[in-house]
Amino acid sequence: MKIGSIDLKERPVLLAPMEDVTDISFRLMCKRFGADVVYTEFVSSDALIRHVNKTKAKLTISPEERPIAIQIYGKEVDAMVEAARLCEEANPDFIDLNFGCPVKKVACKGAGAGMLRDIPQMENITREVVKAVRLPVTVKTRLGWDAQNLIITDLAERLQDCGIAALTIHGRTRAQLFTGAADWTLIGAVKKNPRIRIPIIGNGDINSPEQCKESFDRYGVDGVMIGRGSIGRPWIFREVKHFLSTGELLPPEPFDWYLDILKQQVLQSVEKLDERRGILHIRRHLAVTPLFKGIPDFRPTRVAMLRAGTVDELFEIMEQVESNFHNHDNQVNINVL
Image (cartoon, rainbow, N blue to C red; front, side, top):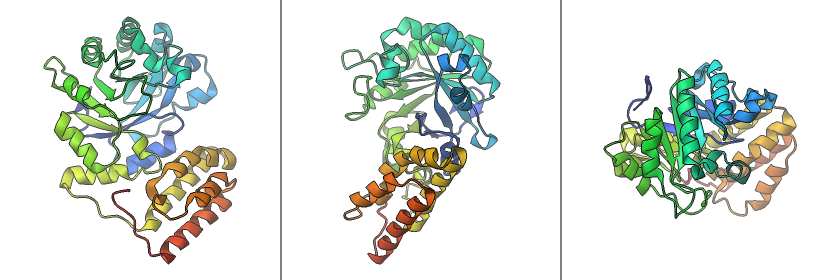
């Protein structure tokens, strides 16, 4: 699979762009475990062209992350074009246009998945951004606005005609948000369309190596993107890559190995922000990580972790979890991890 001149080899696995998740420290962690491509958090075109510092900070990338894409969103052609040019100065490997974010504050203002209700404007933005930058431009979108408007098969061709280098499809409508099951059949239909020449990347509900392989085998996609399945579990890329290359599940590591990775994430987050904000930022990973799934009566401990206000307090709780785990001679469940 190629995006422009970037050769990602066969069956690449990509880290999805996620707001408040895919900051530079998490991207580097996922890269370490085998993610073939990583994406920044969502960058607002309006905020970027107003030079909002918090937004500009999202453009910071590291050589170790490559290949990396900066993803931008907005609803106005001029703002998206100017934002794309500013992104190009940050020197990513390509620029991704977000036409899929379903959250109300984005979609209901006409940006993100809101563009699915204004396809001519989506085409205008895409066409003009492609013309404005030298980098490859890609798009991430959904099946349609709702179940009565499943437009992705036609939309894929139209976006291809605008000059994009690849298309990522999340297998839900905007109306679904993140509920229900992702529908990969329409993603497969786009890939099987003989008029489609660009790579098609599938996204939605990939939480295991087996699911990832099935998505490649059953639907013929060129790449698979993992989003929520990586939160609190950056090692999923290591597991997936091993399964794709060998057909065998990677044997589980000791509990301490996984816990140490979560601790590293805490420290990286604190280093990037500060102790208070860093711990707040990492709570999402600690709340959903599958590492603690199945531990009896774990809820009070989880609550205590999420209330911890310092690294010392948080690590003391995590070390107690580790001690209790060994005392009860538990085993890490590879089907969970």
